[in-house]
Length: 149
Image (cartoon, rainbow, N blue to C red):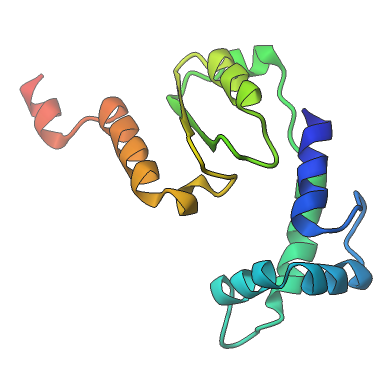
């Protein structure tokens, strides 16, 4: 699982480092992935700090380099309803891993979007919204439901 994840990170960011991001890494990301950088600029402080994407990646990078790993016993102890969503073209996680996660969580649902990537919510926003709303409807009650009880 971790090998696939880090291979996805290398492909996505066009760098191969598990340590802190250096200025050279950021420069390479800017050169190799200009569309991604443009997206980060558009989404994060576009007017006041167009280069904020560098700080953002530098701050997030350590978390991405140390993905959380829960044991099957820890996952089995989570009884909060959970929805595992992914695209079948996810570069970081395999469908088999999502299925395993959904099976380990006692109250989990699983949805795999065909033709969607790691950013399933952007690739297929309507489908994403429908799945999330369906999940919320199944696991929440409206004020009318509580009055009827």
